[in-house]
Image 1: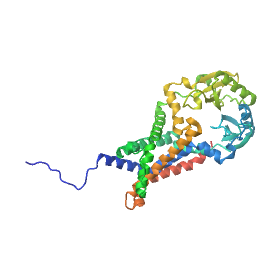
Image 2: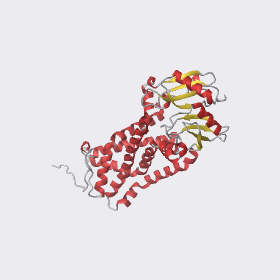
Image 3: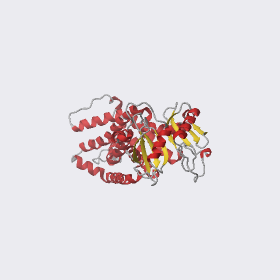
Image 4: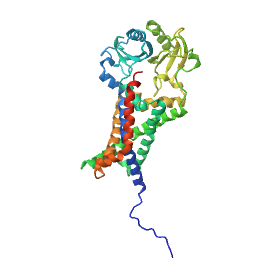
Amino acid sequence: MNEHIPVPTGRKTPKPRSRWWRLHAWLGLKLSVFLTVILLSGTLAVMGNEIDWLADPAMRASPGVRDRASWGTIAANALAAVPGGHIDLIERGPDPWFATVVVMKAPDGHRRRVLVDPATGRVNRVAGFGGAQRFLRDFHRRLMLPVAIGLPIVTGFAFVLLTSLVSGLVTYKKFWRGFLRRPRWRDWRTASGDLHRLAGLWSLWFLSLVIATSIWYLVELLGASAPVLLPLDPVLQTDRSQDLAQPVGAALDGLAHRARERFPDLDIRRIQYPFPGVRAVGFQGAAQSWLTTEKANSVWIDPSTSQVLLTFEGPALSAHQRISEMADPLHFGTWGGLASKVVWFLFGSLLTGLAVTGVIIYATRLRGAWRVAARGISWWGLAGAACIAGALLLAPAALMG
């Protein structure tokens, strides 16, 4: 009988779990630069407003003063601070200790942020359009590139994270037993590996949330976005050449009163001024709807007649619109104020640490550790570094407004 007998080749066929580990290590190593920067920028973006508040005293409200200047007073003082300017938007800070920000277009064509004390209505400072919050959000979202280019690059990394999540769980035998397992400190390699696995397990819920919302952003970009809650309704539209109203003082306060009459539960947080093609003033804010942005609750009023033209109420949104509205509060942790943002910041820091410790684990498994790891990152790391450098070079122009 001539039976076919396998001839030993000296190589063992890798087990399925070994293949998964190789995939996990390959992604973490080759894309480590990109992953670290995207995760770190997102983590810092969660606290972007707070960073601005710490860095710029003009971002702070008068301490201990509970009174609040009227919208009309804030608008009038901001307009006086930028002669010849045009108000685009007025927005209260995320917490009572933040200044109110009035976004204006100056006569030179660039935007300015007028920082106004919400208690007194006094202008603290006229600042440039860019700040830590805007830079971190734009960098994290699209690497300062046009949205059609930058957003797919960033959101595409959700699939890298998803693959890393699945491969990590498959590689870790009986991972559900590891949630309370203490890290071993006998040497650097063991400690870094145990900490990597422990942080990964406790970050599972957060990583899953980041992946889901990131994929949703990509789905929206590809054409499956929900009907927008922006003033595109024909009832609001007008000739783009028409002069835009700039209600301030008593005129704006009267419109705000009218908005509250129409929508008593509305806590106005944001006022959108008319812009080319749209003649109404939009009063946006919070109401009895959970996990929505300001635009989900709004009243749009014709400033010349005080007539309510359109109203959006969060509870009346479709399921598709609610999912779209939930994405930002869940991705950046803004849904619960400062407390939820702190939690998101801490778990974002854990994810960033996972990207770094993954390279350390790979390096400590090899001889020539860091030299071999650096060679393993190779052109992928250089490509990531070049893209990040390009984004930083684009930042000044992007932040001019």
